[in-house]
Length: 157
Image (cartoon, rainbow, N blue to C red; front, side, top):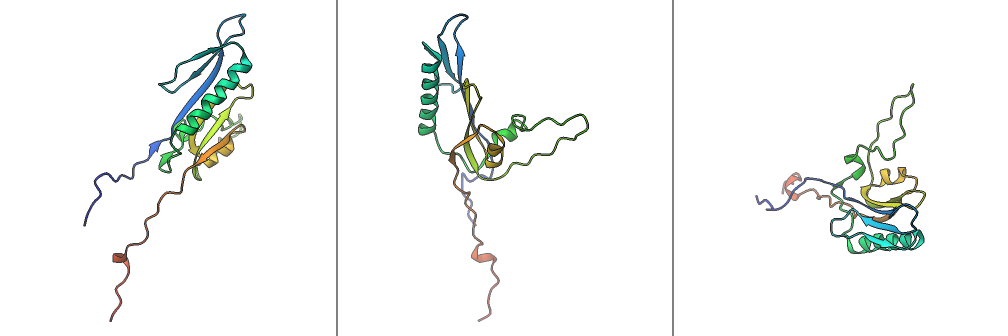
């Protein structure tokens, strides 16, 4: 009976990163494009329109260069307890429990003003709950082990 040396069944937390567009100073038209990824340096650009274009191109470059979503990842929303898209309960309501489900996807969520873009490795159900989310990539289905021959009943000759 052999065991694979590096086989694990552990799941990892979904990745998330944000690209932001912020004003540089008061009364100035300059904007700063920043990314939460550690290797990315902030850029200062002359206008919001140029900044938005640069931010979107920066995000697209990350999506092209980065790895696909991992089928073994936990939903990033689950790690944050789904605060980003669950509506708060009213005074006489109980909050409905949320259950993650579906394939793991890379979803791009943005604000309506076009000031930030967040990429999340989350389940397709949480991505569908975000009104501004767009799916960039879907993880392949996890491999399911076929029943082993040893577990089938032996037939008499």
